[in-house]
View 1 (cartoon, rainbow, N blue to C red):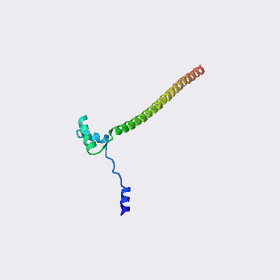
View 2 (cartoon, rainbow, N blue to C red):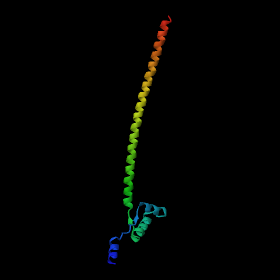
View 3 (cartoon, helix red, strand yellow):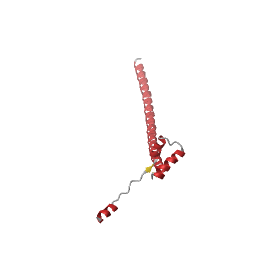
View 4 (cartoon, rainbow, N blue to C red):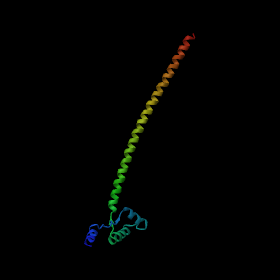
Length: 122
């Protein structure tokens, strides 16, 4: 009987903490807590009476860090894509210049051919 008591005492699991975070604040706002005074009353009941831990500030900090990281990652991707676009524009300009040179070469060759044809027809 003593071992049963000791075992139960040692293996007693602490109940999970009840948290009032950003999601719960948004729910409270959805159901009518619009002003600072109304939110203060909700917090007084939920945290003061019911024993929930107020984790709104921690949740906001985590959200900000996550979103800022995501925005930086997307900004980096945008910069990479802009560099690729600029490289493609340069490549296209190079190809267009080559096409122009080819057109000039064709025109010159046709003019030379015409010159030869005219000189042999005399």
